[in-house]
Image (cartoon, rainbow, N blue to C red):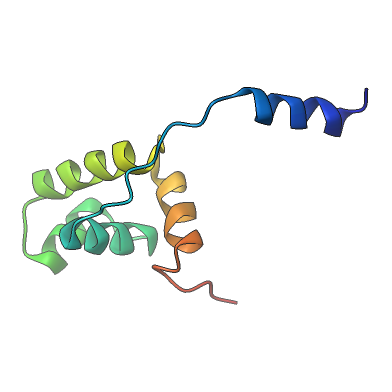
Length: 87
């Protein structure tokens, strides 16, 4: 069995967690800013909310779309066309 067959078997065998794609407008705004590389403090300032609120939105986003870090958030934002892919 070659490597690609092994990887394919792994993918098929693992159940995927359901992703809750019902994101609030606030979560989408936070997601866009973080995916663009803004810090939590910068996002809070731009949205005129506290850094704690940004952290809360981020935690909820990660849970809803089943990612563990900001890289996962960026990948999701790109995949869903929430931010442009720049050259």
